[in-house]
Amino acid sequence: MAEYLYGSAAYNFGTAAPAEVPVFPEAPVKEPVPQVVPLPREGELVHTGVTAEPRSRVQVSLFVLIFIPVLLACAVLLLGSYMRLNTLSNESASMAKELQQLKTDHNRLEIKYESTFDLAEVETYAKSALGMVKAGADQTTFVRSTEGDKAQILGKQGFLANWERKLDGFARRIQAYFS
Image (cartoon, rainbow, N blue to C red; front, side, top):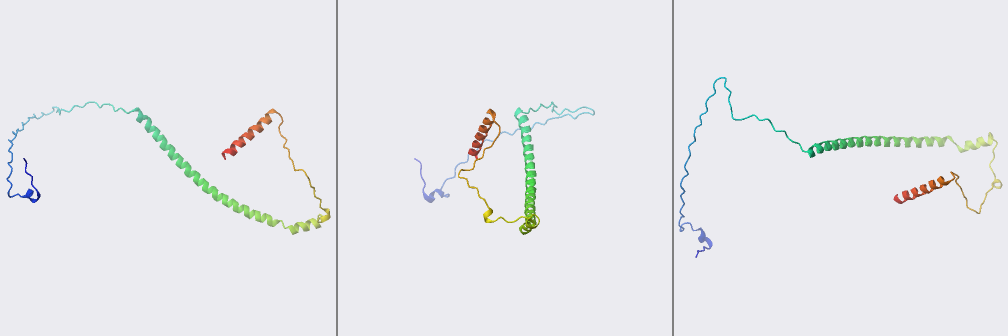
């Protein structure tokens, strides 16, 4: 039966007997064999043992032949779309500036236009030059109708006109549904 050691007794180096170290026989040493290489004579070709064989052709897979041009085409298209986007953004910014300038000009011209017509001047001109007078309360006539107003649009007559109207109504209903 094996003995078990507990506590610090496991580390009592003074009482334990040293184990025997196994001795292995030494392996025989082979001495290198010198190789004699004769020196080449003058004008003699030296053969190094390396033969120059023609390189084998590198085979490229069909996947690589298709993938690389497609990848390059996608890169070119992507760069082109970025350039187009940049151009359109610049154009949009310049158009927005131009639109703002046109709105400013429109407001300025509208104010100038409205200031050219003085209603007092128009009334004076109408009275003096044209001989016009203001209408009195007894000279105003109103028309009252008990029925509602009605309008009829006259257009193409016939079979095709009816189908055009129906197709137009159908297209408007589809457009109203999706918007």
